[in-house]
Length: 231
Image 1: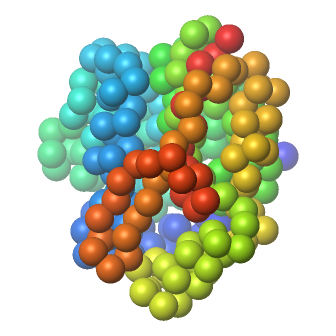
Image 2: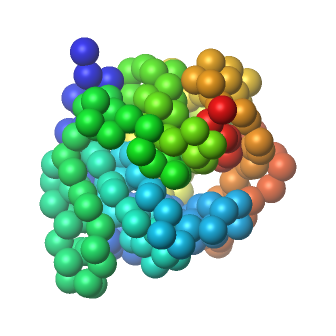
């Protein structure tokens, strides 16, 4: 059984044309993308590293990691987004491999082959996030690095990420997130450990919907990142 939510895939497929519009539906991702890429760069040298970006969408993070020296593969279940990613990479002379497929399918072909796997802002959109963390870890070489990000599950995250972002400030399309799919840091930490990986660090990520500025901190109340190493 594929670990995808067809409604979620359709939702992002319908928005595909917006991926590279910095003032459009994905504006918050454009704001946090340099933050995410720099965080990964600070943890490891990306030069010639074999990197897999799971749930790559239109390729925002994939291109940023390529620019930092990585050998990048991007996968996503939403075909239109992958087509946008391919076109944008070709237009900008970036040699990135993009495939319309799930991590589970790729794992059958490429298990244990990547130095780094990223899965950012994806876990809250799949039916079985624990299995996705396991699959991402299996795709890593021993000692490979895993980078995850998602949204905490509490009243504050509901107010901030759904009510605020989607209905008050309108910085995300309505229906982008479902509260029941949010994941507590303690839960995600268990997923990581159960996947035979060592959790190294967890950082909070704050996005200001008024100034459209973002920064990393130690507040895990809403958005957060995790960094782990495969044992």
